Image 1: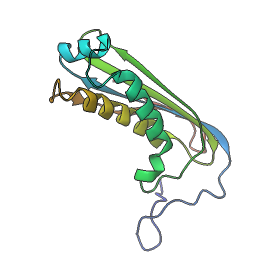
Image 2: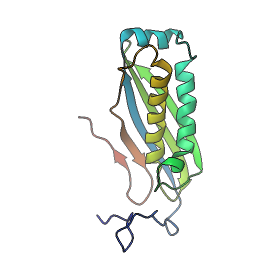
Image 3: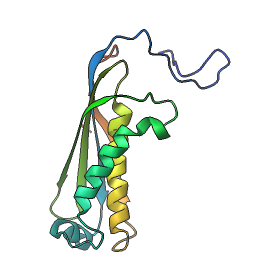
Length: 158
């Protein structure tokens, strides 16, 4: 596979997508935050002093997805058509974050989905760090993507 992020001088460049076909594109990424049962309970019961942790994290994830190109240098600014962030947990000490991002365009939204879950996890950490400093973020990964010339991708379990 030929990488296209380098020019003829071997220097980084933003890929030219001018001639690519406009297609519907979607990507889903996940992350998680592992914490103590006490911190987990405070989040679930809404007793964290900074406010509703999941509501703030959800807004942070949406905002981050929309601004991905502002801090990932080679990402194209994209008109996102949908961002959905969902939370689940193990009822004990792990919060799971999933983001699905959609667009109709010339390049994919994998980075936007990964940015969304990362911002959510970092926001959870920020809002709960007074309760616990040793929370663990990750793993963070792309689980699926669709659209574009490279076709669909689905992460295999394992």
